[in-house]
Amino acid sequence: MTERTSSPAADLDRQLADLEQEIERLRKRAREQSVSVDAELGPLLERADHLRVQIYTNPSPWHIVQLARQSQRPRLLDFVGSLCSDVMELHGDRLYRDDPALLAALARFDGRPVVVIGHNKGKDTKENIARNFGMPYPEGYRKALRAMRLAEKFRYPVISFVDTPGAYPGDEAEERGQAEAIARNIQEMSRLRVPLVVVITGEGGSGGALAIAVGDVVLMLQYAVYTVISPEGCAAILWHDASRARDAAEALKLTAQDLQTLGVVDEVLPEPFGGAHRDPDATFAAVREALGRHLQALREVPIEVLLDRRYKKYRRMGRILEESTQSAQSSQSTRSPAQDG
Amino acid sequence: MLNWLRRPKYGSLERREMPAGIWAKCPRCRNLIYRKELERNLKVCPKCAYHHRLTAVERLEITLDENSFREYDPGLTSTDPLGFENYPAKLSEARAKTDQAEAVITGEGTIDGWQTIIGALDFNFMGGSMGSAVGEKVARAAERSYEQRLPLVIFSASGGARMQEGVLSLMQLAKTSAAIGRIHDAGLPYLSVMCDPTTGGVTASFAFLGDVILAEPGALIGFAGRRVIEQTIRRKLPDDFQTAEFCLQKGLIDMVVPRTEMRSALARLLAFVGAPRVLPAPIEPAPAAQP
Image (tube, rainbow over all chains, first blue to last red; front, side, top):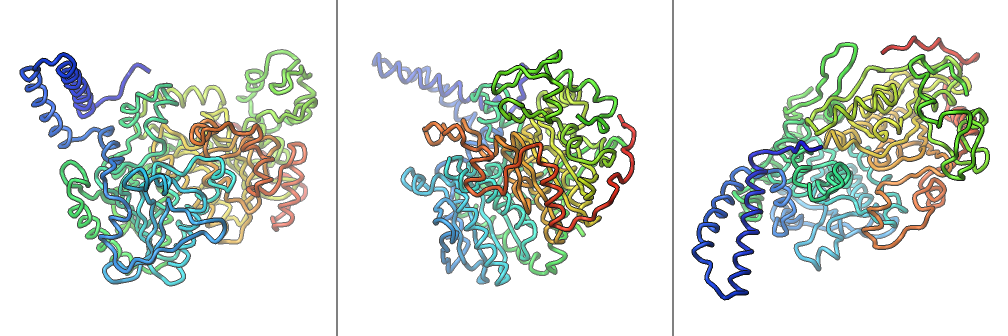
């Protein structure tokens, strides 16, 4: 219990947090007592700037969580607006209502028709309230499935953008079958008869993310995260202390780099120094290039081969030990699915 | 209670689980019950009908025909892929507590003669949580169902995905759901039975993908936890929220079946869905225990 998982990057993070507190204390004193603290403040500010550069150069998992949640980070509509043309939004699950937390649309990518689905986080409080902070109800997932069925019918590939804290944990969501809606999507995506490319752009929050994140290729932005439980939730359960989220973020191995190593993510897309929001156009360009390349490759694969590959890709995930052989059967793969038969 | 399936190493299980002595106390009605009577009644309280939680071994015992069970992959276990704090210790603890290698037992057997592939999750093993090994065993069971053209029956009892294996646990939702998808494609039946509790990642994958979904009375069934929901909506939830009966009323499951009638309900369903039947029941004797 007392052993804390820690990395040099996390130490930098802590140092910066301490330093920022110290700076704030000094400034407060200056305000309250009308004294000059410039002499003391100067070196601290310099040190803080230096630390920030170090942190952005090699951010800790906890810092990456912050970047993934950054309010200025490009949102679904930014990605779709930049990458696609002729976007026509589709509404409703035909069963209950339209869920604004999840977008479904017909669109063109590189001039060719695709179906786009994605979690629709807002940029500001007003948008976020309207779109429930990108946390879908079951009807959101059912709308996504309806759109994917359209893609299947017209043989368009599906591009899915993932950015959600999780499926909405509310009473009505439960009553309308949140678990069933997620399970259904996961199952149906595993055998959808068109290419599926997933881009994790921000927060990949557990089942609520996976419900639209099963794909032939899963791409992930460098400072996005993907996790079975939020670091705060994990810390609360494990250590009964949500403030240890920083440690949980380390332990959960939720960064793009970690997930590529674990075989969950096929390709990590680089972000500009300091995060996607510092240069959105560079971010869009990286996503556009990777999407174009993978869609082109997937279109050439016969559908039965693609389905078999997709099945095997997920079938291999995880790490197990079989007693009979005592050898680790690793299903880890860092190869792209295109290399697997 | 039947004891043909209880291999020697499980002999002490019940003593540890239940209060010592010949009397047991029902956690719901607080009545003292003669233990023999409780067990004769499949651990359903004769006073208030509270369904005590069962181990996976007990579940298979009361469901399958005597000596019909053949276990799959008994030595398949999780590793510690993330190097997660205390995980190896927790696994050892769970193994010592349950005498099981992992949180699910899978295999094949017969239910009133109907041949099935069967799995039972064990809530006593780290809350029945699904990590790589549980996902793998469930997926293999589904694949055997596919290969042997036999129905699949899974009893779920789980708190969800196993946090200690991080996103690899989340991927087990995809692995198991994809494998179940193949069964459906092949026109084979899959019956899902939800026991107390079935929550989180297990509900968001194989538990809710059954052709027919059954549940035990009073079982807690839901995706998100009650506390999280109450914090989110800033209201108290009604007592019956997320119970099997609540789910039945909301149209989420097909039937609530008391434990004493579960075996016959499954047999009747298997008759409907065209499982092969062998009479007399046993296929072959259960193999000797393998450590």
